[in-house]
Amino acid sequence: MKRSLAALLLVATACGGDAPTGAQTPIYAALCAARGVPELPSVSPRQHLRAIGFVEFGAAEQGVRQRAEIWLGGPARMRFKASAENGARNVFLVTSPGVGWLSPANNEKNWEAFRSPEVERETLLRWEVLRFPWGWHEIVAEAGPDARSWTRRAEEGEIVITVGDDLLATSASYAGVEVTLEAWQPADDAPWLIARTWSWNGPSGHRAEHYDELSAQWMLFDDWFRPPTSEGLPDRSFRAVGSADAFGVVQATLWRLDSAPDARDQGGAQWWLRDGERFAAVLLPLDSPPPPHAGGMAPIADAQRHWLRWTFVSDAEGARAAASEISGIARSAGMEVLGTPLLSEPDLSVNSVTILLPVTPKDS
Image (tube, rainbow, N blue to C red; front, side, top):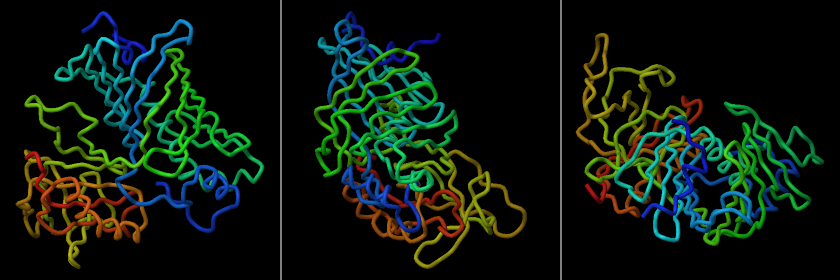
């Protein structure tokens, strides 16, 4: 049964790649300066958003106001919680494109699969606005110094971002979803500016979000955007991510192979680097059979079962720098590091690179 976005998020009170290349253009540099962000984004998992405030559904004079919390972990990862005065709450998760979950009526132990294309479009639009102008360098340069609105293609249509005289975004739209942006202020944990008022219009109607607390350098693991297991533990089951961003612990087997193609194939086989060694391997779910092979060495399973996996867009230099930092990142998150990191060969990665680090999670 189809339900509107407002019905998903509103709690019923009756219930208990970003890095630009080449020289920076003046307008791009000015857009970065307006927000106080560096012209090149850092390669770091500490780039996620957490915001706390309130949301108003409907017109201000007749609408319903509720507490809102949002965690944004990428263009297709979001956790949104709306809470009523009586303590009831709804939680909506966007896990990946086409995959969403709802925990209604104050029960975060019960989850139902539910996809909302409108929420997915909002998630992508939030991420683009929060990162702008990162990832838009070529589009900004081609439009010229006098442009104040830019467009780029996405899967379902065009993303449009418009800025005002101060070069801060005033509105953005994508595939029938529109948002206006106001109250640009520094984040609580970073000097750059972020809009604290987001007013949405789409198929579900009007909704305004106002955030008192807003942090832009959180490190959120992928399992935060998935329902827990039936035992109440984080869901760390393996999922292939392709070229998408990912950061989290996965339970999987790394199979060493006799060889791999010169680019990642559909099965995930690729070349890896570790401690100066280059070898072919593929990461598969724990219960998967050994990958097929035609002659040569039979696949060999690595003994490790938990991996901190970080997939992101970067050049070779950035990837190697990130690999040198991942052990410290894991330890800061309370994990035991069991070995040295593996890096998918950057020179052969078309869209993204992956780092794997064998770990023991702190709650395992």
